[in-house]
Length: 208
Image (cartoon, rainbow, N blue to C red; front, top):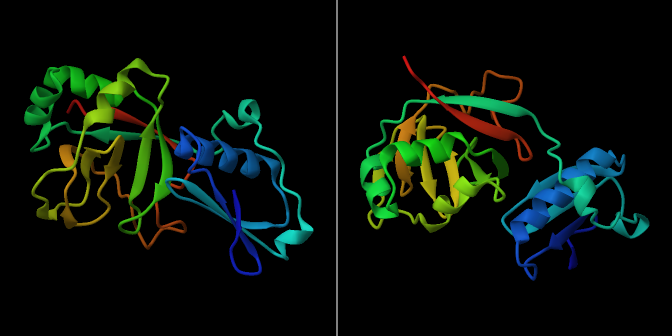
C-alpha cells in the first residue's frame, strides 16, 4: 500500500504481508542498489518503508519488488566481539530449554541484519537470518516483566525476535546476554552510528 507522506514522500506499507519486515528489508535493499537519483532517503520501520524524494512522487515510478534481486544485503558487514557474561544469559537459556553454550552458539552462528533504528541514537534492531536453523530460538524471547532502570552502554540483548546493543546507558527491558566494547554511537565519528539499516552483523565470542 502506498500512502502519500507530505509533498515529497511515500510511505510504503507492507503490514498485510505475512512477513512485513522481510518485505521492508528486501525493498530497501533493492532501491539502494537501484541508485535512483530522485530518492533522497529511505527510512525503514517494522512494517513500513518511508521513501523521500527530491520532487513530487507523482512524477516517479518505483520498480516492483524483485525478491530475487533484493535478497542480497546492500549494507556493510560488521563483526562485533562479545563477552557472553550477561545477567540474564543462564536464566534465559533455561527458559528456552537450551544450554548456555547452545544459546551463545545460536547468537554467534546467525547473521543479523540491521533492520531499523529506534529507542535511542545508535540503537539498531537486528533481525536474524530466518533461513538459519538457529534463528528459531530467538522467536520466543520476550522482554523482561520488570525493566531495569539502568543498562550499561555496550550491553547485548535479545527480545521479540531481535538482538541489539545498547549504545548508551539507559533504562531497558531486553534480556541481557553479554557485553561488547564496540562503540555503537560516537558523535566524534563522521557517521556517529556504527550500524546503518541494511548492514549485517556477525557476533563473535571474545576469548581473552
